[in-house]
Amino acid sequence: MQNNIKSFEEVTSSLDKLHLDDIKNPDHSSHLFKTTKYTLLIIRFFELDGEGLKGVSTPYLFLENAIYIYNRDENNFLQIANHEALMHSIEIELRQSELLIKKYIQESDLLEDGLYTRKIPSIFLDVWFDLKKDLTRVERILDRADEVLQEYMSDFGKSENFPKESFINIIEHIGRYQRLASLNTAKLDTLYSYYNSLKNDKINTNIYALTVLSGVFLPLNLVVGFFGMNTENLFFSGNPEGTLNVVNILLFMFATLLILFPLVKFLERYVLQRVLGKSNLYNKLISNIKKITTIGE
Image (tube, rainbow, N blue to C red; front, side, top):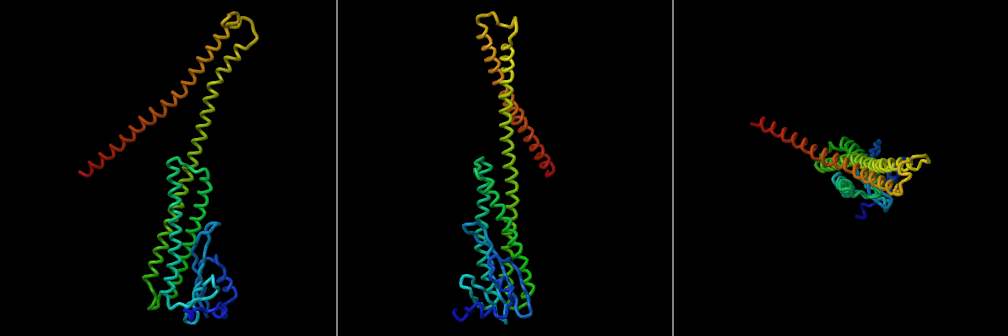
């Protein structure tokens, strides 16, 4: 194994300086550089650290009929036997990224369940934004990796020893998880719309409560203002129980208005919407099922 390890200077002595910077850049996007002397393949996947999702690139160098993998930790190159070994290295990197994508999908599902069961976290928007941002970036990284690997296949796939089955397997995995990332990104958009709808409903409820309070106390204020006028021959002005009568009138109006608003809301929600609405829905479903059954006969 030691004979397969080459120093950075030994392998890169004939490389262009710009390509040396590309190799050392840990976040370089997937790319295929072709020159007359060598070919540099960079495949980037991703990993998670304390600061969030970050891209991690792995350079592969084709030089003088040899294939090298850059070891970023040791700053040297490992010479591998063939394209099959290269596919194996990419597959390992991809498998780690797939586990990370599954974690993101799991977090999206938890956010969805919490939203639909009304157990909404107080930091919903922060969690939603992080998931949306990272899944969008995952989708973009996988798309670029797929494109570059297709270029790599075009250049080296005609070789008799090229591992086409391993290559196809990697491309299928990238496509599958790219679709999953895309679907969950779309799902997050739906969750955001639903979250906004819930917030709007809550705001409407608060406005309705303020409207009810205004509707209850506005007539009371009118009555109090009327009996507070400094005019002659006012009702109950000479009555020793006039104050008690006014208080009784206020209490009666308050009780009436307090019962009237919830009653109207109850009739609207539980009678008009639920009973009639459900009946209408079920009647439509039954009608459609009967049509399908009739056609089948």
